[in-house]
Length: 486
Image (tube, rainbow, N blue to C red; front, side, top):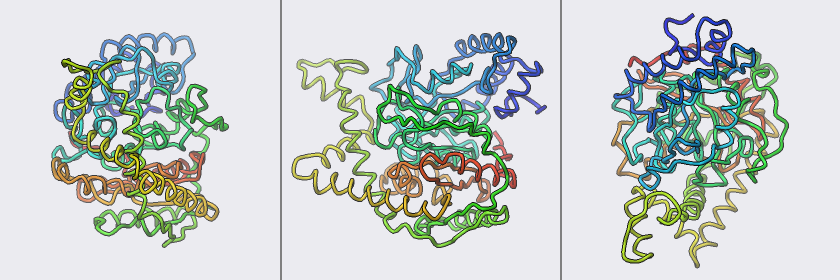
C-alpha cells in the first residue's frame, strides 16, 4: 500500500476499496485534503464539489459492500468545465457562462455515474477550449506542478495539472487540436484522444464540432484503458457517434511489441524543436525497437506543414457558428441595453475573452461571401489530403510515433501576446484531429525538471494498438513514476 491514498492510481485504489483496506469516503477525504494543500499554488479547479463528492462516496461504499463495484466505483474524478454536469455549474471558463447550471449530464458523465464514480469538481481550462496554455481562462491561470512559473498546456490544463499534482487520480478533458495530449505531455501524465466518433460528444459544449473529442487524463496507461472502457461506445444522441464494436481495452495491455510496424514521420521533427525534446523522443523510439517493434525512420507525410493553416480556418469557422448561440437571450450572461442589437453586441463584448473573439472573427471572415471558396472550402480539400496521407501510412504501419510538443512547458506570459507562437504549440497534435484518428501522449523523459511527452498515433478505432504500445513503453521505463515536488 502507498504511503497515502492521494498517490494511488485507479487500479491500485480499486484493489484497496475491494479489500476493504480503504473506504471511498476515506479516499475522497484524502483527495479533498490534498486539494486544500496544493490548490492555492496549482489552481486547477474552477468548482470544487466537496459535499456532492462525499455523498457519492457514501453511496459508492454501499455499492462496494453489495458486491456491485466496477473498477471506477468510489474513485474521485475531475471533469473539464466544458462538459455538462447536471446541477453543477459548467462555465467553459467564460464570463458568458459563469453562472450556467446544466439540467442534464453529458453522456460521459452519465456513464461515469453508472460506474459509481465520485465527481470531485470541474477543471479550469482555456475559455471555450480555445488555447494551448490555460492562460485564456476568464477566471485565473493554472500553474504547472513541475514548475509553478510555467503553463500546464491547454486547453485541458486544469485536468492535466490536477492529475500531475495528485489532486485527483484521473480527469476528463476534451481535445480539438491537442487539448488533451499537449497538457498531458507538459504535465507528464497519460492523455488519450480517441477516434472521432468513439466517445459521445453529447453534453460537450461545442468548439469545433468536426474536431472535438472527449478523452481521459490519467497517471498510467492501465488507468487510461479503464476510463476508456467506461466512457466509450455508441450514443444515439450524438449524430457523429459510430456504432463500432467496443472491446475491453485492458486486454491489450501486454508488453510484447514483436510484429508491430512503427513509422516516424520526419515532418513532426519541426524546425525550432528543442534539442532535448528531439533527443528524448529518439531515445524513446529506440526503446520501442528494443521491445520488438519494427521501426522505419524518416517516413514522410508531406501535407503535414499545411495542417496548422487548415486547422486555423476550419476550427474558427465552426466556432463562429457554434458560439452564435450566446446572444444574451436564452441563457448565460446578458448585458441589459436599450435595444436588442446593442444588448447582443455588449453581451459578446463583455462576455467573451480576447482569444475567443479573435477566433470568432477569423471564422466569420473565412465563411463570409467571397472568401468561403478561397479559404474554408480549400481548407476542407487539404483536410481530405491529410486524411488520405494518414490512411496511406496506416497501410504500411500499425502506428506512428512523434513528439507530443516541439517544446517543454513555456513560461506563463511568454507567448500570450504572440498568437502565432502559441498556435505552433499544437503543431504535432492538430493533424490528428484533422484526420479523426486516435492518439495518446505518454511520459517519455525530462529536460532538466521539465516533462517531455511522446505521441503514439493509430489508425481509426485502433485504440487497442496504441494502448498496447504505450503500456509496453511505460512498463520498460520509469518516467511515469516521477512526481513533481509540490
